Length: 269
Image 1 (tube, rainbow, N blue to C red):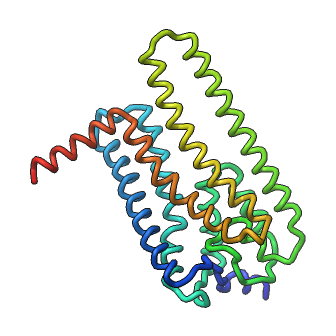
Image 2: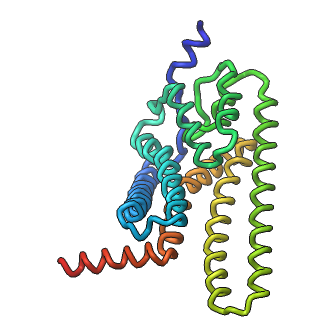
Image 3: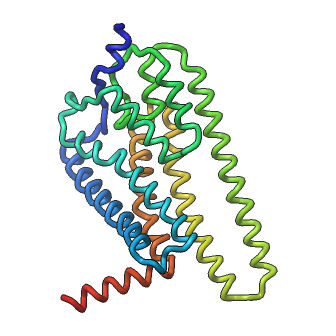
């Protein structure tokens, strides 16, 4: 009964260890980044849903990216903005809220095995009440326990290695196949378009990969706690902000629609 009561008690979130002046600049930066992310991604979704000419399989599949980016930014940034304005000793979160935040954090990062990963941490009893992070994730949840967390660590590391290897493997195979097609093709226009598309995707992929896996590995080294926090914030800020610019502007139909809307607003004003 005590353990059940403790599970629903308030937990203290450590937050970002920065000065008061730095917290104000961080708040402004994150607020601007969040507003831009929401406006740009939701704007793309509205354009695709409102324009009948964009109701094509490619653009419908493209809707998954802004939806994912909206979830990724919303699950972290609003709470972080609130904590930046709150005294470090008052940054409380309930256990249930913490579990929900951890679930959606991992749902944004890796959709596979999210329920199992969180379930392995929820099953543990807890003896601590401080989240040694600026938000709740799977590692923060099982660090609340004094039990043996070997299963959690082994599963987390194994899943990370498998995910990294499979992701890199599929990307490598895809680009090799594209390169072989381009070498055989004598159409310069097609090759140029393929290079442009691939370079754009590769840039976003590398940024997402680095900003995503740095916090995962640094969670095992307490001396790099602040570097880990910075990396995880960037994972929820940079990709969601860059994706609508890179992919949205690259898609010819979406780009033309945006330019048309801008011209109409300029003419009407």
